[in-house]
Length: 635
Image 1: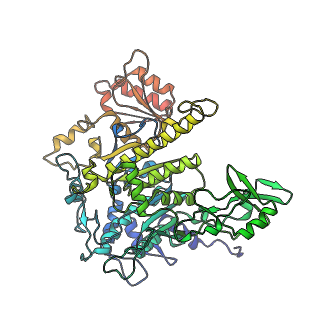
Image 2: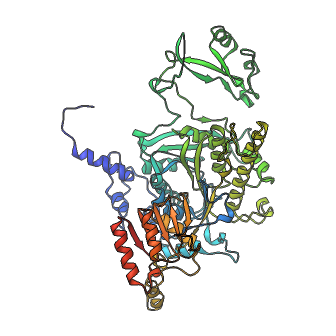
Image 3: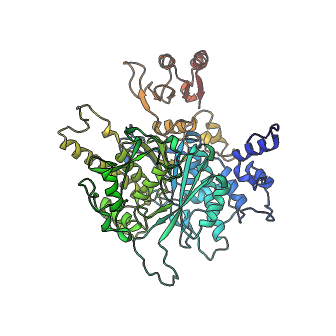
């Protein structure tokens, strides 16, 4: 609003601070204690005499959030599908560390975050410090405990959060806060986050999301019907049939959700007849359960609703519209013409009730069909529900990245794949799942799945396989060979897949974070002559350098040689994004330097040990790279 007054500097600065640190602004005023903690100051005791969400261990949660990591992600092509070309990612590892690893590469790049965290029912086991004074070293030792097969030991990795605990809610909040904060960093400015929750912590979740995202960025609280029928629960006064999905955006002013009202001016009226401009709307909806209405299954232009659906119009109204030529049929689907003069601005696309998008029962049956095992996963979410949330959130069907860092059984991955099939989209997923051990008495364990991550990866493989089979069958019916379009041209349908990575310690000694002591002085001095940790493989080092240089896990990678006389592995180099970044790990010589300069890269990273005994070559490399305006780094 124009006031005629000069710019209010104080309010402007407050708005800037609010954008950077929304958790530090409460009811329009700066919370100085939160600001100090956000900037890293220690030994702050929060004052409770004002409106603020506080809990035992909140200061420690900020410390955990602010601690950096030197961890990396190790590629595992053998567990992937089409590793070299796939644009989807599955990461096996503890999600807090993974979120920190992704900060540089994926900062501001995620369109949609969808998570289904522990609900804190009193029976959950999840990661949180037993003692709020637990050091970083103690934490790393605890989460690093592994059994003889290399799997994380459940008794050392998890702690059961019993209702009898004096820090019952606090433990859950301390677990959630840093993960949500880091997730926000990864989101695009037009990004959106959906968090599944039930009655146990919905009130606290709303408060911490208000603090992290800003109360003004609340979009909706969706209510999902998780069960199809009422069941008697012993001791329960009310049988719970619903759960919540809280939705927040990152920046309200530029965010657009399909759920929200769309103005008439922005609608696309691409059709026109004597009555004016119009758009087409499908008038079918599901006709199941308590919503089944046989009276709504009459014929319109000789067509009945498909597959057990019903019309959204009454028969009398439909006959009147039919007489006015208001219906069109496209591929057997009846659509209603809606003219611009009657398309109201207040029309909302979708309600916040999610009652027709699958249930835990349908999700269990879907998993059983895919994996051939009954009850392999407790209370999975249906992929139809996740698919609908993605539909609500998007402004584009191409190149959007969907992140789920509580990956579970892999529902989000299936939802993305199925939705891409439905609308020929090109969305990508990143799933993160802890290698949590399956109970040895579970059906999953008996079927050979040792961890939850194993179940998730196998589900993704089978969904991809199912989609590929469906494509091949459809092509055969058209008389085409595999991966051909209607003109017989080759398509890219065979490149669907996903890359598997596993959280691992750094391949470089200099990043392992060891302090120099009298006992390890010799090992520390060795860092200056050979920075590579023993047993590190080139591909592992490559991806670590890519991540820490800000490149995506799915960026194009080529292994090249400088000429026909060189063999791969001797004098070869890695080219990322068609030469934008070049990484040299095996050998350095003048021929290789000349080849690299000819490619005109932006950045070159190599190992300092490749110049051992040849200071002249290193000097030449530094000078030539500088003259070529190449950012040249040695490790």
